[in-house]
Length: 254
Image 1 (cartoon, rainbow, N blue to C red):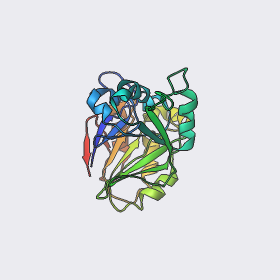
Image 2: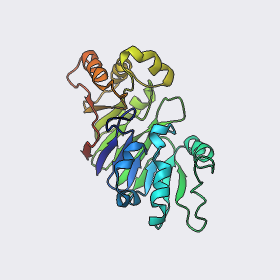
Image 3: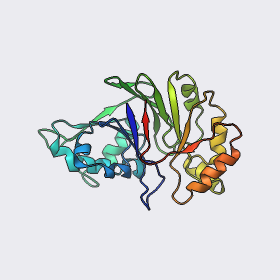
């Protein structure tokens, strides 16, 4: 299984793209602006989209995927999320005011179907399993464990301090990497707290709870503050396993 980072920035500009991970060629984790780099054929191959939460940087390409390639497909795209996230999509995005309700059109073959998922309950797609994990954000949100059977990667989603995440992570026998957000530099720690994101010190406070020695990758850094955030993380992290910046285009093979 390959996981390709289509976008991992906390914003746009200068080639930056917002959050989206492509699993093999048929699964997306979030649908931020990184999806716009795919060709029409690549977009048409996407069968499954797992949404962490409904903030625009994580869903902005979803309506456009359906509009662009829905007619090229012979079945709907399945969007997976917890119930409260699906309800926000229904009420505020696919509501005929922001975008057509593609779960109803075309009537004979809708482009979209919703599937509610539960935290800690894996969705199995062939040999692959995608499991929603708790997140602590300003809106209903989750992270995801992506498991090939041979190995797993955990993506935290957007989250503030989150003890429940570590309880799960520390029991994953085949964990190969952790992707965790740190959106703000330390001088904006107050904004991070209010918006339920991490800053360098709160990240370090979270990583103390990690009992596994695995590569750690930092995502969702605010544009123009990337170097500052990564330097502050390095300065604060007292152990050898210093987190690395997640890079757009990076591929994990597990």
